Amino acid sequence: MKIHIHRSKEHRVIAGVIGGLSEKYDWDPLLARVVFLLLAFTPLFPGFIAYLILWILMEDPI
Image 1 (cartoon, rainbow, N blue to C red):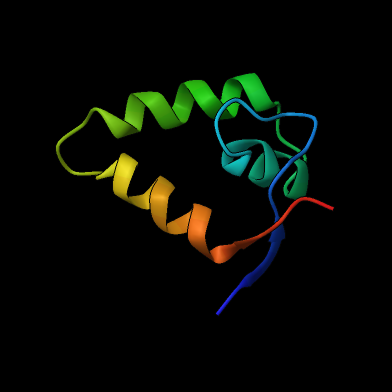
Image 2 (image 1 turned 135 degrees about the horizontal axis):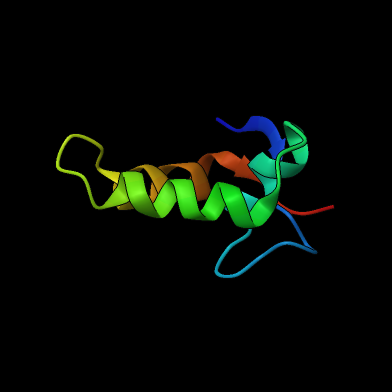
């Protein structure tokens, strides 16, 4: 099962997940990473688990 969002080739730090989301929704990649990191360290948002799941579900970069 894949979702129809590609990981990014240009805006990747680890796997391109946040870069792919920022390209799809026309966000600034740096701002998207900062927001993700802020949410990842809060107890209510298991950010690293969400990142791994998105890494698996997102299609490879084109």
